[in-house]
Length: 148
Ligand SMILES: [Zn+2]
Ligand SMILES: [Zn+2]
Ligand SMILES: [Zn+2]
Image (cartoon, helix red, strand yellow):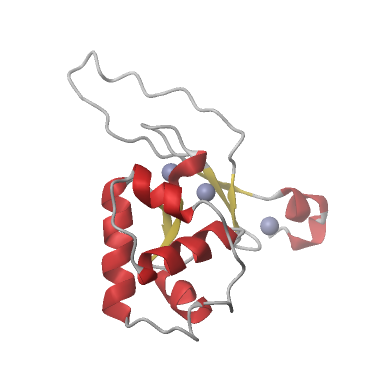
């Protein structure tokens, strides 16, 4: 496979998660490593078009990665799930995502730390905290014309 950018680290990621190395796993991981923002299953399939694993393989591989925490479901937009690697998240918390109401782009706020919700005392045990924000992105809030 030479059509995709070579990326180190896929072997280690699979090993750490205790997963066997298979071609679809490696290729899908590469797509996610090279993605600049969260991607949908369809976008992953498009990037893999030369190698074209079937939809079920892509779906099952993503499910497997989700279970192992290698991949996180970043957010759902228009009923479509967007995936990203889990390496920018802590064990219990994903970095926040900001969706601009004007340009509809969603940004990963990987440097923003959110305090965990304090609900453990009330008997809730948190497995995962996700924070979604919306408003205007820096670009849109600068160009006032775009405001409704
Ligand atoms: Zn995450
Ligand atoms: Zn915007
Ligand atoms: Zn993200």
